Image (cartoon, rainbow, N blue to C red; front, side):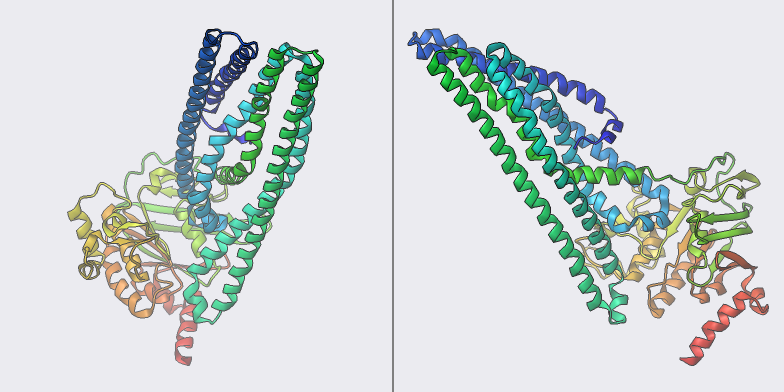
Length: 578
C-alpha cells in the first residue's frame, strides 16, 4: 500500500519525521492512560478512599487530552501536506499537458487525462492523507505498547506478539486479491472514461451515419464491466474488514480469558491484568485503521501510479536554445533542414526528410490526405514533438535542434479542431491566455472575431456562463471565441489544425471571412484537407505518406501536373458527380 514513489514528493521526509515523533508521544500517552486508569480501578477495587484516585484520574485525563491533541495535530499536518502535494500535482499535470502538446495528449487519451485531473488527484490527496499517517502509526505505536505490556505482564505480551503476524498474514492474502481487483477496476474506469468522452465528441457523426445505437451498446458493455469490477472489489473489501475485526476481537478475547483464569488462580495481580487488557485494543487499533483504510487508498495509489507515469513521459526539449530570437516580424525567417520524426521505431508513421524556408508574414497551408503527416508537421512546428537528431532548424539564421522551447512557443497561438471552453463567462474564456486584460480589450477582440451579434443576443452579454454546466455554444461560435483569444493575446505566429473540419459549409464561409483579416501581419501555418483555403495561402506544403512531395505558391502548383493538382482534381471530380 505504501508506494515507494511517495518518497519523491517534496517535503515528505520532513513529514515522516514529524509524524514519527508524534506517534512515539501518542504511544506513551496511551500507555499513561492505561497505567493511571488501571491504578484508579485497583484503588476502587481495594475500597480505598476517593482521594486516592484523584491523582491517577487527573493524570489519566491529561494523557487523554495529550493523545487527542496529537491526533488533531497529525491530521492537520497530513491535511496540509496532501493539499499542497495535490495542488503541485495539478500544476505539474497542466505543465506536462502543455509540454506534450495535442498529439501526445491524444495518444495518452483525453478521457484518462480528464479522469486523473478531475477525480484522480482528489483520490491521490485522500491517499496521501491516510497512507503516511496510518503506516507510521502501525510501524511505531503497537511495538512501544508491546514493550510496556511485556514489562508489566510477559505472558500477555507474548500472546499479543504471536497473534499480530497471523492477522497480518491474512490481511496480506486478502490485500493482494483486493489490489488485483482494484487495478482491474481502475483500468475499466479509464477505458469507460475514454470511451464515453470519445463517443460524445463524435456523437453528431455517429448519428449522421446511423451508428449511435451500436456505440450505445458499446458504452453499456464498458459500463457493465466497470460495475462488475467494482462489485468484486467491494466483496473483497467487506470480507477483509470482517476478517480483520473478527481476528482482533478473538485476540483480545484470548488475552482476556488468559488473564481471567490467572486472576482466579492468583498467579497474576489485578493491576498488570487490567493494564494488559486496557492496552490490548489500542495495540490492535493501528492495524485495524490501516486495514479499514486499505481499500479506500487503492484508487489513490493507482491514480498516483498513473499520474507519475504521465509526468515521467519524456517531454520534447531543445538541446540548443534560441538566444537571439525575440519576435517574429516581416524580416524573420524559419528554415528546416531534413526534418524527420517517427512515432515508433517499428512503424513508418511520421514524416521523413522535410525541408522548407519561410520568411516574414506568410500564410502557409499544409495539405494532404488523412495520415499524410499534416498534424505531425504542425506539432513539430509547435514544439510538441521532438524531431530526430539529424534535423536542423534555423530561426533568423540561429541554429537549434528543436522548437520545443519557451523562446519560440511564447510567440505561438494554437487553434485546434475543437477549442476547449471551460466553465465560466464568455469574457473569461476569451481572456484565457491574457487573464489581466481589461473589459474594453476583451470587447474589441470579441467584435473582431465576429462575436458581437451573438453576445448582443444574450441576456447577460459577455457575462453569460458557457462551457460545462453553462450555456452551450455552436462549433462556429467556439472557433470565434478561440480567434478572440488569439486577437487578445496578440502573438505573432498562429497554428491551425483543421479548425473548420466539423463545421457546415455556411458556418465555415462566415468564419472564413472573420479569420482572413486576422491572418494579416502574422505567420500563419494552416493544416487542413479543405483545399478552398489554399486560395488564400501564400505558400503550400503538400504532404503524402509522411513526405513533402511539393511546395510553393498555390497558383503555380495548380498549373503543374503534380500532387496538388491531383488533389484539386479529385475534389472537383467528387463535386461534379454530386
